[in-house]
Image (tube, rainbow, N blue to C red):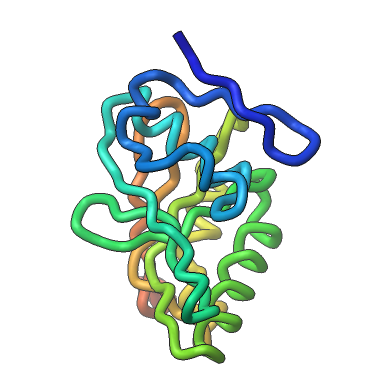
Length: 162
């Protein structure tokens, strides 16, 4: 039986499996955004284990969203367009850095969108295109699995013509 809870103007369905890992569902309303809850729920339903990171209101600083695979991750969800994804990551890095917080691992949750090879290639160039907002890890969660994006350090040099 899934648990439905009101969040703003919409409802988020939290599965029984995910609900067992959440410390206090009532606190979700004030601590997390809809996309963070959706991503967490989707991950748990596909047997990926993670722990949501609560906002520390006493410090008033941003936090990452989830502890997963031995790291803290920031979750982003939008349409599968490089510009939108990179803007979200860049803005999160910029705001966090101003407050002395490190956000260097990102999970882009694609939802029901298809993630094509062109987008994966564009995302692999993120650090080259954003030298002041480099990240360490980028995962795409799509179609019930994670896709690791290999972030390039420099542009590949063209092969000699001979």
